[in-house]
Every structure is written in C-alpha cells, then in structure tokens.
Length: 193
Image (cartoon, rainbow, N blue to C red; front, side, top):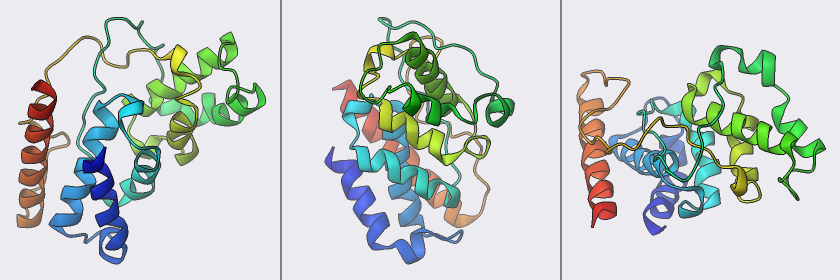
C-alpha cells in the first residue's frame, strides 16, 4: 500500500523531528495515516515494516482509537483483561515461539495464544502492552491467519468525525487532528468506492 509506505518514508526521513514529543503537524499527519491503516485494515493490506515501525513510533504520538473491521465469517476473540497482561500473559510471545507457532499455527495452544495476542493488541492501551507483544502479533499474523477472530463486536461504519482520546486545543494538535480526520475521510471514501 503506497500511502502507508509514503507516510513511513516521511517519518523515517524526518526522524529527528518525528521521534520527539514536539513533533510537527506533518509528522502527526503521516503517523495517523499509518495508524488508521494498521488498526482498521486486514494484515495483508498493510506492509509488514509499516506495522512494526508504528510500534516504534507510537510513544511519540497520541493515538486515535480506530477499531479493526468486523468480519462476519469469524468468531469473537476471547475476552482479555488489559490491566493484567504483564501478569497473566507476559510470556505469550515466547510461548508462541516454543510452540513453533511461527511454522505451524494449527494447534490449540497456538490458536488460543494468537487470539489473545490479537485481542490485547486491538483493545488495550499501548501503555499496557509490552512492545514485543504488539510486534509479535505482526510476526505471527500470516502463519496464524487461520486463527483470526473479531476484536470488534459487530460491523460498523468508520466514523471519521470522532477521535478518541479527545485532542487538546493547542493549535498544532487541532491542525494535526483536522488532517487526520481529512485523511481518515479520504481513506474511508477510498474503501467505499
């Protein structure tokens, strides 16, 4: 997907500005392009390096909540407790490796762990998750595609008018949020054509 690669290229080319808390409106706009595709699209629609690099950059940006699209052919992912991920599932990525899920994800052990990883990734706040879990979802998503499940409760229309958490009212954030909403509207329009 060239849009996300272009956004990543911009962020990498301007790393000295984009990897700071005082990043520019242009950095934020490009980050949000990556984030909306990462969060909403199927894994095979987003380049692998974009999925991984997003997790390297997210500490410098305030994410908007964008859900993964619901698929009526999939079952619901198991419920998880985001506040306990480090206590209950802190070793889940290592367990995926020791169960050889990277080569064969058909076992019940792999299915259970992958579905929990996906639910943690899609529903928990980034500050609740270890980076290896966030990246681990992308490391296993191709081999574990047979175990995909829904993290959203039902089909929904992508709402391009709401960004949660609510942006602050500084002028740079308003500009970035406006660009994000415009980018999200364009993204939604593209998929609705």
